[in-house]
Length: 367
Image 1 (cartoon, rainbow, N blue to C red):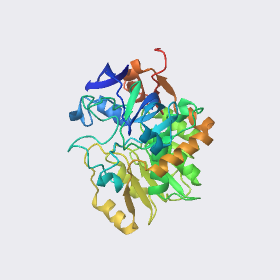
Image 2: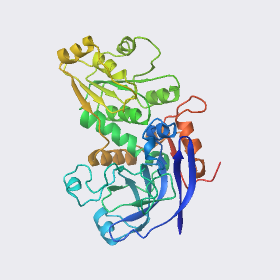
Image 3: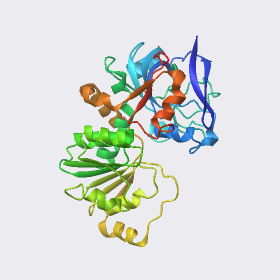
Image 4: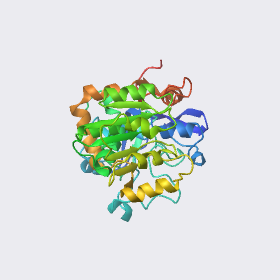
């Protein structure tokens, strides 16, 4: 039996190829992919802006699916069986080395080898390393979380941006009841931060975007943001402050822009927290006056790492209890054969309109 997988071979190029579905052995599994959310990193890689030296890769790291085959040890460890639905933690782990046991990066990966599903060369056995596929291999050290099989795929496919939103807004940012919060950037991760801040009891959330983000900004307001602002002004701080009743306790910077860290430092209140989760394109430079603000305010800047297990569990519980309001975030679904079109649509590469969230569903008929 074979699986169909998407492989990115060059900038702007996807190929649909077949690979054998492996026997996962006693400690691994293979899942039948039901849906895979598209991340901004896949858009950047497609454009040749990110880690192009890794090509070819099997993309897709926001994977939810059903257990196809599973070894006895894996079934016992993960508490799941054939046909159970699971969400997959994107980090690859052997589960046995010192790094895995201590909760750090897996030591068993070869130097320079990507430590995540969706970023591996399909020539590495058994080849099924990405979620843009009908099936994906689960290595023995993988972390999977069961999910209610009745939840719509529109909602289920949001687990990754929601988990990151919880990680950045609540765990890293420490958003509390009645806080004012600013989210710079309104992609799926930014929208996840809006949801998380709202559930933490934030008094007001203002989210920003740029030209082409109107669908995402509209979605942010539907999710409870007090204001969603397209940043066309030369003085973004004044625009954002004009929409707030109070100085923000937390500013979450999900943007790839090198300028937004300066905006965050100017906005955040004294002793506030800035969470930087967006990988920057270009050098980040602070003027002398902004550096003085950073010191004088006593600001804490934290790096927003990808979700931890606690945030993933919380996101899945949220999806299962609030499916109706969350599923609207995922606006488009495409079959596997149209993966290139899906990534291009999500990134606004044709019409300039970036969608809030797009997913690939291998079981869909071709449109």
